[in-house]
Amino acid sequence: MSAITPRFWAGPLRYCRWAARERPGLFWSVFIGALGPVTLVTVPPIRRMIGDYDAAPIPMTYPVPSGPRKKLTGYDDDTE
Image (spheres, rainbow, N blue to C red):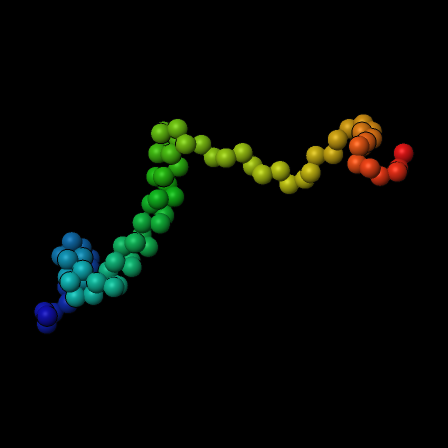
């Protein structure tokens, strides 16, 4: 364990190497958290490039048929 903690802005790569060894939980949580905004920008164009498109939106209303309803027959009920 080193006695002197490296400063981030003095040498970012050196600091990342130190943090990965000495504080892996903090280092990897920050690393994975930083990938979130990057994936929001990079994944949609890649998906479209390989031919994967968004699904059609789900209908929010039920389509009401136009015209009168058909009369049901053949169910052995005595309604006419």
